Image (cartoon, rainbow, N blue to C red; front, top):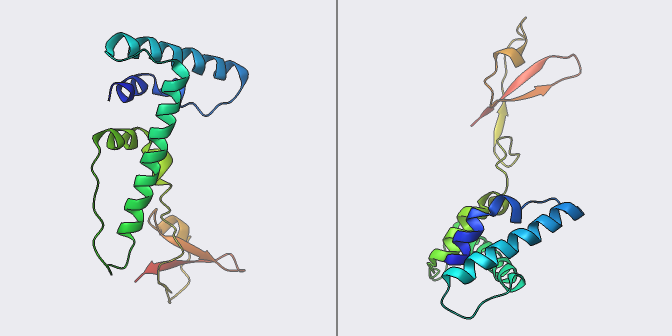
Length: 151
């Protein structure tokens, strides 16, 4: 847990997505600081910064695979034996840190839903101006918009 605490403290730098020379140099310097802090509070054999970095990468891989297993379980059909839920506080802390990279994006305009076309008249004002923010509009060749309603 000490490593996760230290990475959380330095998260903005060590998990930066930039890969230029300056950023890599600053990441390595930050990992060296993490190693110094880790070795000052740890009562075990001193660890090199590269070992701690590899340990963090392994924790992220385990957290991602655990999240994938959870997602597969949630999306399953319910047949078969229930999955044994493993609770590891370190993995849960790592998931909290990298959640935006693991969870993916939510698409409010998902095409998997069932929709029906609204029938009716062509209003004189723009339907796009009247539609709520989350509605989907279909545009035809004559520049009129028809809202699509959820069923």
